[in-house]
Length: 80
Image 1 (cartoon, rainbow, N blue to C red):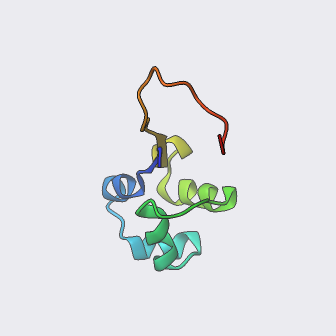
Image 2 (cartoon, rainbow, N blue to C red):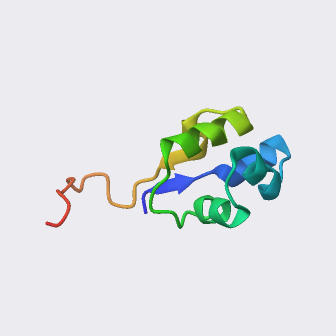
């Protein structure tokens, strides 16, 4: 997946545990682990906002796009 989740980076910078972040955000540690490990298919904006508030960061500090295709390969519509 070309979206990379960097929650672990921000946790390390803030010296915060997964359990503490989950409690502050109001989600289970298991759900936070799914997101943190890049296994989530989606994230609600309310959850993203709560993560940013708890970690005092911007959404771009938590999520980034990483190309998984050659730069000269054209984008294609889904399903084609």
